[in-house]
Length: 235
Ligand code: SF4
Image 1 (tube, rainbow, N blue to C red):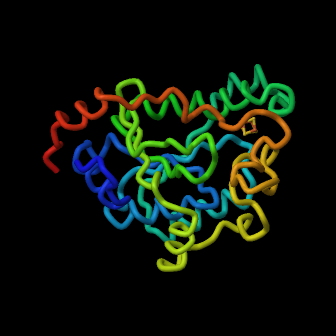
Image 2: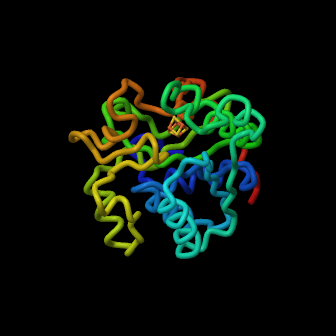
Image 3: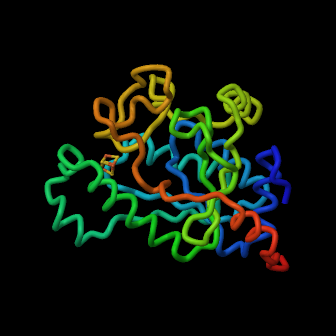
């Protein structure tokens, strides 16, 4: 696998060759830019599982957009997962945990289901890009997370690249992106951007910048060795 400036399609193709197709998935929020990665993957294999964590707090526009993209892109294996109902009932019976303890809310509604999903995978794709926020400026194409690969094919794409890709492939636009939401998560914690940082509308007014599902990554020589020694599944 080329590790120096590979194109997004090359990263996706190499990953789909390296890993058992039942053990790799796209994890998507079906947000403002999600259509790009989903389109790229669907062009190579529309049967790759696509995982959507339904926190129960998404905009209804996001749920409708998710279903529209599934149909337009021909995604055959959309998997909608949910937070543990018992834990929600115990810790967030009123659905207000986000207001006082957003980290705990994200943990229950996102991190726990994400952990359940990834425990059954060898690798997963994310749609993160370096330009999205200062906190993502050093994002590598591949990360090691608990011995598994987290692959970021779009890491090196620019904002213009993303816009051009939407136009070139006539991709549907998230309805909220049309009215000033450049980054879209749960409804209570998302507002229109407050500055040039595209994620500035996420948890606006508090220091929180990430939900926690993308933390704890490591990219070092072990990652490279693991990718080089990993056997292709013989697809
Ligand atoms: Fe809860 Fe907000 Fe995190 Fe969604 S983004 S899980 S509502 S704190």
